Amino acid sequence: MQKKYHKIFIVLIFLFLFFKLNAQTAHYWVFFKDKNGSTFHPFEYFDAKAIERRIKSGVDLYDSTDFPLNQDYIYKVSELVESVNVQSRWFNAVSVAANEKQIKDLQTLSFVRKIQPIATKAILMRNRYDTLITRSEKDLLNLQTGRMQADSFWQAGFSGKGIKIAVFDAGFPNVDKSPVFSHLFKNKQILKTYDFARKKEEVYSHNEHGTMVLSCIAGKTHGQNMGLAPDAQFLLARTEVSTEPFSEEENWLAAMEWADKNGADIISSSLAYTYHRYYTFQMDGHTSLVAKAANMAAGKGMIVVNAMGNDGDLDWKILATPADADSVMSVGAINPYTDFHASFSSFGPNANYQRKPNVVAIGTVIAAGKNKLQKVKGTSFATPLVTGFIACAWQSRPFLTNMQLFDLIEQSGDLYPYFDYAHGYGVPQASFFTATELLHLDPTFDFVQEDNKLIVRVDKKLIVRKNGKMNNYLYYNIKDENGIIQSYWLIDVYQKDAVLLDLTEIPENGSVTVHFKGFTNVYKKGTE
Image 1: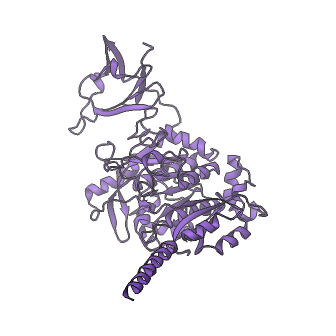
Image 2: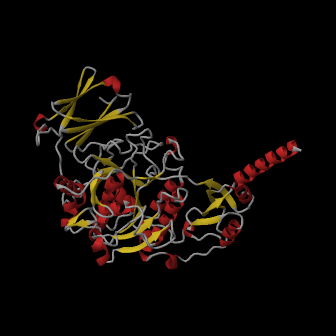
Image 3: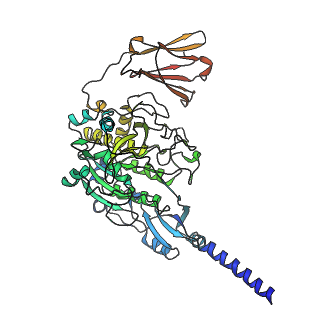
């Protein structure tokens, strides 16, 4: 008798574990095959700014990716799953919470194209916080905008006015109460807000990271600008949460379509997916859904600005998605005190050897937290500085399409045309957009070949000491015959023969690119 009960007990445990396993829910994207039966009226759906952007960029107002989803499909899916969460027009998909059995049932539906698991966790690009502002931190506050020549923009009357920026982050506590943002409310510059986690319009709570990011675009303290675009207009979206790790990719995509509908020109985002779902070889700009969405946003005339990530001194090392997307303005960070690559800033390229980061900015800044000004570090804070720069540049060239401006932002970098995977094209400079005439720069170095050696010989008069330091930075890289960077260096020059290379170190048909004191030149092996 006891054996019989024992067997029944074992069977019951097995059945319990079986049903529990099958009852566990996860989050998925369900992609549909078509949008049959849907109708679309762009002038009723879009903000006037979104219509204007599409016309300027030559985008079809009746692009099928903007059409609504087939509501019958959504209804039939909703009958089979725990819940339907987000609807994506761009990807003709819905996100659902479902267990394994429900997913198998969905796969039998004739209108379902594919089902894809949703990434389980995103990393918020934030780092360390210090104390209240000091005299040295006041100098840092001046530098975070000054390093990009912000005064040149402001004196020319460019402060982001007329440019609409969507900021995606984890919350904006006290933005509606802080004196740092009072001008935004006085002038009605915050146009719309939405919390995609709670499905509410109120966003002025939760993680202060978004407050700090916004201050690095448009904050003011004691009459001083903390970012470059204090007169821009804003759409604030809370997309990132720590308690609902499955929802962030869904929220980000929903916010992207919301921002497009409401006429955003620029998206500023600190979302980053890395090792929680992906391998480094998948950081190719086309694998993750958020990278695909970012590229689609660019196709609709917007500029997406995204942090590279803060894994430079960790095992992951390289950039995170969606910064890997080819049409994203990916932003790295430099140390404000040395101008070197900031140790935490993630490295490029992406897995397809696409050049990343595109540009860099100071990654240690003074930002407005929930209750006080704080010194903070991270590529999250370099990103909004570049976002503000782009807003001013676009105000100065309103006739440009997004990708035309994208190219000019890269060209405005203070290292351009030199590039490496730590510093990108350098820090964007406002004078590129405000100068009335082109600056002619004389060569600052020569390539000298002696026997089997290549020497980079600089003009000795340019080796100067400033404030007790040399600060004579020379950048150089070595590329293979396909133009892919094999290695790169940054050195402080103290003698005229700055670099000595064995020609055997340079690949056949490869090249050496050098940048010193604003001048760039290339030595090509095989043409000497």
